[in-house]
Length: 124
Image (tube, rainbow, N blue to C red; front, side, top):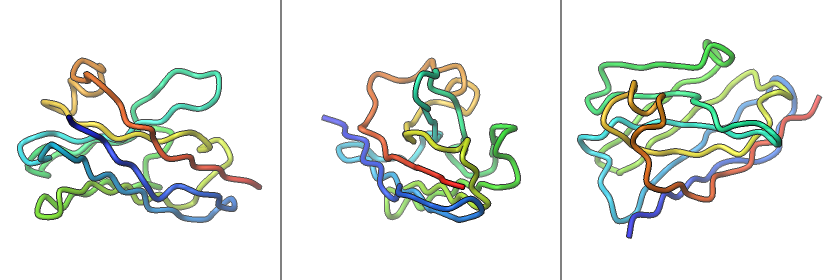
């Protein structure tokens, strides 16, 4: 059974940084596009960042562009999300998942299940 194991969340001040990690168990990330998503209380889950299977292509949500970077280490079967200059509106549960392409992930077309996510809380 595939489990998506997110970690690295926590509490940060405005302007602070966090690095999130995602290491699926029971599944290799190789050959999959990978993405990060988030869900704030009372809001729908939204796309945050995506990286293609070969790391040639990237895409970021406009609200976080310039403040985040997604990268992958296939040898470690791990995907990371570096978040800098955090803002209170970034407060949410962050999830990772994998799919066929960045586009299909943004359409939420690929996902059979989700992990528990990792909570990020930013205070001013």
